Each structure stands twice: as C-alpha cells, then as structure tokens.
Length: 205
Image (tube, rainbow, N blue to C red; front, side, top):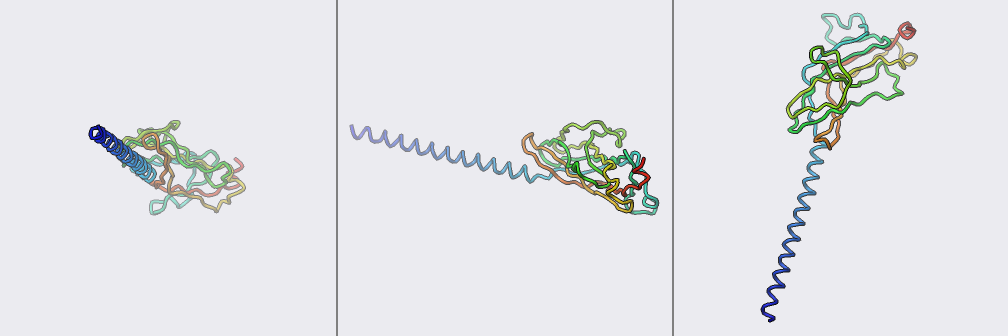
C-alpha cells in the first residue's frame, strides 16, 4: 500500500508547484505589461502641428511690424475685446487614437497683455472662425483642425505700459490616450503671437 500511495502524493505536490510557478509568472508578466503601458503612455509625444491659419479679430497692428520686407511676426495693438485666432491642424502620430481635452490656460490673476488660449472647434471652410470646444478624438495617423484663441486681457490696463510686449510661440495641449491615460504636450504655433501693452486711450474705451 505504501508503494501505491507515495507516487500519488508526489504527483499532487508537483502539480501544485507547477501551478504556483505558472501563476507567479503570469502575475509578473501582467505587472510588467502594466508598467510598460504606463511608461509608454506617460512618455508619449504624439502631437505635431501642420497647416495653419491665423487671424486677428478687433486688433490693430503696430506700424512697420507687418510690412512686406518685415521678417518677424506682426505685433498687435491691445484693444478691448480683441482676439487672435490661430487654427492648427493637429496630427496624431501615435498608433492608437487620442482625445484632445483642452489646453493650459493663463490663470485668473494673470495681468499680462493677453490671456488664453481657450480652444474651439475650427470651421474648416473658414479657419479663423470656430464653435464651442468639446473633447475631440483624433484617430491614429489622423488630424483635426483646432482653434487656439487669445484674448486682450482687461487686467493689463494699469499693469502693462504701452512699450511692453508679451508673446507666445507654443501651446500646451492636454489629451488622453485610450480613454485612460492623461498627458499633455507642448507644440509650436506656426506664427508666434505678439501683443503690445495697452495705451491709456485703449483702456478708456
């Protein structure tokens, strides 16, 4: 009887050990896969900017900053309620879809020459016009037109002299990958936005 019961016990022991090893390996592979996915998702930089259109709305231009021979971007004069719209075709170079959810914005206590940018859904037939923004999905290898809108800042009155200049040449876009991983990426504007501080007369209007 001893000769028949002993092999049975050995068989069960081996089976349990093999099962434990398999489970351990599976858990390690799962942890490794999650770590790789997190690392991949949080270091992803999938966005590039392509074609663009720009347009000031209610803003003037500082003389001799937009002449035919001038090589720099035009400098805009501060006017209450003025806006500058830059529409970028944002391309997703990743192999999975991403969803653009917003952009980094100046804070409520910011007193610089302009604020922004809130985003808008660009009108592709009139790229300097836009509708209210909502999260927009960009498929792998696809692109979408997104409007970045800068506003003349009322708080600049009394804080920024007319000879001061504010500018930006990039925007920071927020996005999610696979609907789970959140990230942000800074992409360049096609044309830097430059604005002079407000004059007393402009602030009085």
